[in-house]
Image (cartoon, rainbow, N blue to C red; front, side, top):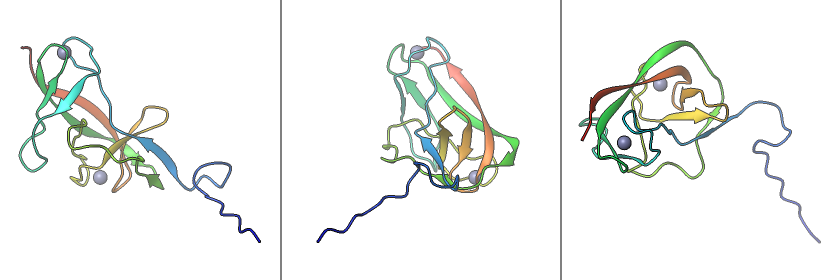
Length: 121
Ligand SMILES: [Zn+2]
Ligand SMILES: [Zn+2]
């Protein structure tokens, strides 16, 4: 006797969950994708570029609208993966959908990413 275990994640089920991936953005100075988060969410959002050593902070702005059924990335981001705070609810669960839109995994707000405090090395 065998029991089939069917995982209903994504696939051809109803569009109830929006798959996301870790937040990713290139260095605003040299364009490298080797960007690391160097602080903690209750301190600041200082990131450093592994390519040129520039530092910067990503910020979000509400784009208007929300996206329902956000599924967090699997695996979840590491502590050093780029992160930022949702402009709507303050959660640090900001992810990217498969088509590159930035969304909050907590409240579902559609967000726009902005890089601030750019300090070239
Ligand atoms: Zn750089
Ligand atoms: Zn939010």
